[in-house]
Length: 105
Image 1 (spheres, one colour):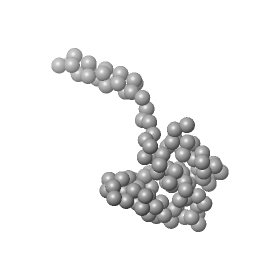
Image 2: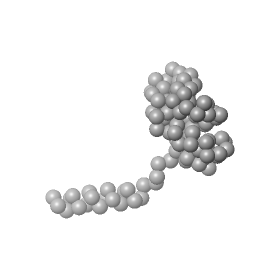
Image 3: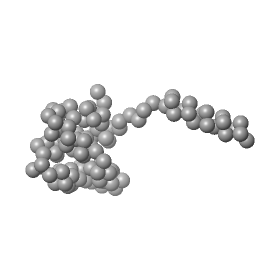
Image 4: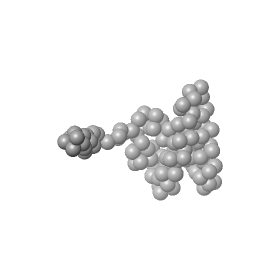
């Protein structure tokens, strides 16, 4: 039994070292570009207004696909702040999604 646990443990460690890092999906890239378009220029410097505007636009773009509408909320809550910070730091809008690794090079 100890041997089996050791083998399973070694396999788990080896798999973690060999598996490639998560690649960005085309949905992440699409949502990032949408967020950049909606939040540039920033909406009166208030993040919650930018978030509401992004969610409304995202739901409009992805209307009719229920699980993707939920992705709009998830993306807004987890990824919108870094996008706004990149824009505020002076990063060109067309470069933001690459900088935060949401779109491929």
